[in-house]
Image 1 (cartoon, rainbow, N blue to C red):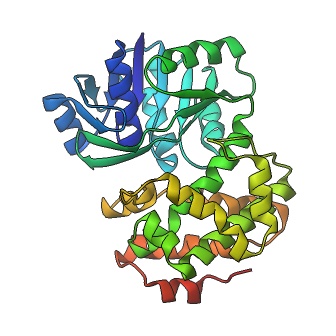
Image 2: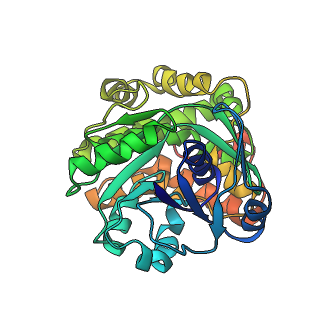
Length: 332
């Protein structure tokens, strides 16, 4: 199958390498040093999914119409990445693989003729250098059909992906996105402090802030009428407990997530962006919670405080001590 992947960072590079290894004709979009590295040496993937070098076609923009397109940019870059490719996307199934909320809404608005699918990358991938991605957590990817997309399209795309990597299919992509959003709450505090997820969770004061942000998010989701869908063994029942328990007891959930990451320090995608001098996805993660809460007329001070601190670090380039974080994020 001819597959085009828009964005070739940690997630896009992983998908490109695995699909190429499975025998597909893969093309990627890339920029700058990453584009040069892929053209010269291919995409090198190592770690939990094994080692491979994918000699894929690479350019700044798509040059042909694929049979399947995958959008794997950061959420904040989705619109700018999709618009230049529209001439090659008309009617082509489009799989949007992004963290946070809103990616499918943006894709529907920009590419209304494409059958849409949502994807959630549960594998932990790190972009080590241009053209080189390593997998520290070889977990599956969840895929589901957006409203209005025929089930047959989902089944066909899932079959293609399943031959290349572990895949789970969901009938509720929105509920799965909210569950993944809770899981992604481990990303913000590493970005603020410069520490790994495991180090943050091991610091009691920071663990309390992280748990408070999760508890607040469960409350916003409950008010919005969201039903959390199962993701990687995390059920709605577990997340309801996080929303109800005192912070000391609710901390079992971020501890569980940190244990699942293993012993290799995991910086999280938000800290990786800051280290590369790029804008983060925080407005589509904790910031999405603040936005939904605002539409519902309810406060979300913990998540709002975390968003402010991530933006501060983006601007200053200086990480904060745990004591500063605790002093500046109002716990509920």
